[in-house]
Image 1 (spheres, one colour):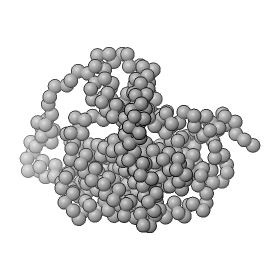
Image 2: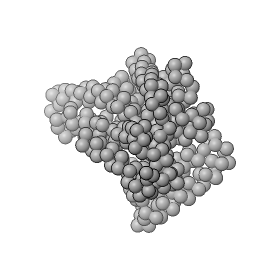
Image 3: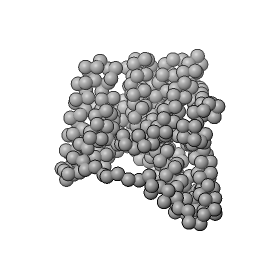
Image 4: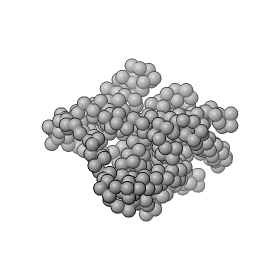
Amino acid sequence: MEMSTYQAVFAVLLIFFVGDFVGAITKAKISSMFVIMMGFLVLFLTGIYPANIMEVSGFAGVASLGQYFLLFNMGTSVDIATLKKEWRTVLCAVVGMAAAILGCAVVIPLIGKDFALAAAPVVNGGIVATTTMVDACSKLGLDTAAALATFIYAVQKFVGTLPASNCGLGVANALVADLRAKHAADPNYSWYAEQAASVGGEKKSYFWEKYKKYYTTFICLAIAALFLWISKILGDLCQGWVNMSIWCMVFGIIARNTGLVPSNLLRDYAKANGFFSFLSLCTIIPSLAKVDLSMLPTIGFATVVIFVAVLVFTFIVFYLTPAWKIVGSKNLSIGIAMCQMIGYPGTELIATEITNAVAQTPEERDAVSAKIQTAYVISGFTSVTILSVFIASVLANML
């Protein structure tokens, strides 16, 4: 019996419900994205869900919009001043992304060019990079490569979380030991006093702050839609090499940093970011419907090879070359590099767990948080939110 539209809507959202529920009760130890992707894969393979469930539900008709609204919002979350201040973390994250891409390139003889190109931006990023590669692969009839990209997106948090957590613990333990040694040597020592010296400067007054009351849900959506329209025109003029995705991101960055719009316009003011994230996922889930049992060994083998290569090259770069000196710590550099596979809010959750495990006083908590959380969030932000979008746009044209 065929599903009705409302049955399909419920069936789709039921899997998202289960994913979020599992993520909540396990405190993100089991990724909600893993549950969602694996759930759809199993239901497609068993025939319980029809392959065209997104079309039947009606989500397919608007799903493509989600990516572009999400990209514009990502742009509005970019604070250029913060990135300048944390330039060492940004540079370390870039080196980590390069190591991951190199790892994917080296295994081309084992898994093939299409698989390597489809996987690299996903390892570097999140939902937008995944959507870009799945869409590019699907248009070229590379169904297995599209499924691989989706599968990697579903499991990469498991791969990145363990080294990010362990390396972060090493950094946090050393930092706390140093603080305690300073207090033992000088009872009047204060970490807060050290930090106060580096804080200063006047706060700018932005356009959006003067007219904050006008940034209602529909005005914010209209502003974003205007920039999406302009991005589409510019993307067509650039014939795809500087595509609509990049322009959406660029306009979001410009609008935020010139004070035209506030940070996270669609998340905090339009309250629509969650829905756009859902729509973006709806664009990659159909690729799982094209997987049959004969593909699973190929996809599984390629996934293992890719993650082994990424981890090996990351550790080689930051343990056997001077690259770790960028942030002054081998452990911190590895942790920063792993954040490309985790993204926000996973990076913040890991940093919080590290802080809770090591710090015993408010001062220690603040010091560890300032070191680990800042580095991890900025790293994930640099890789997942910004650079992976550009990398995906370039590699999609190389398929």
